[in-house]
Length: 176
Image (cartoon, rainbow, N blue to C red):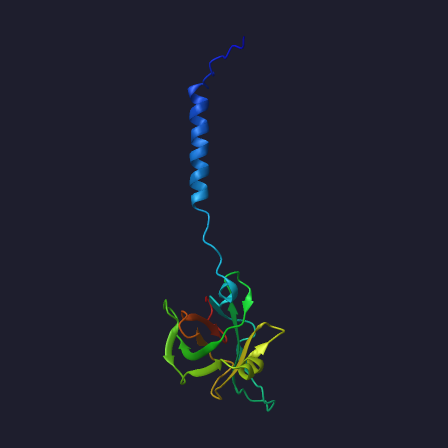
């Protein structure tokens, strides 16, 4: 004859600790991202625009010893933070630099530049394989190496959201 012994119950403190551990694990897992990754190319659409601070500067691209404008390297990044290409339009604006203000943009100094990257030809002209970004030459002969400016950029690709970035270029006042 087989005797079945009643199951022994854990001490209350052990049972409480086990239940608490299960609850903490369930809460931690509920915070995990469980949404599926977008399918196909949608996973690699640009979600961030960055103006490269080292390669965006006043420049003389004609070699005549005078500044021709501002050379810009604009990087688009996908959801993973990796460089990405995009199809759309860049808009660049230059403002005077305003000190002691949360928004450093002063007066707009020149009309906006518009650069489309919406054809195979424009992609080939603008895309730099080395830097993995888009290169633009913003003609503005009044730029000065002694001046401090705020460069803003936006990128829009049709129905997608618009991406923005801004940087300060040129010498900056002490303490900034």
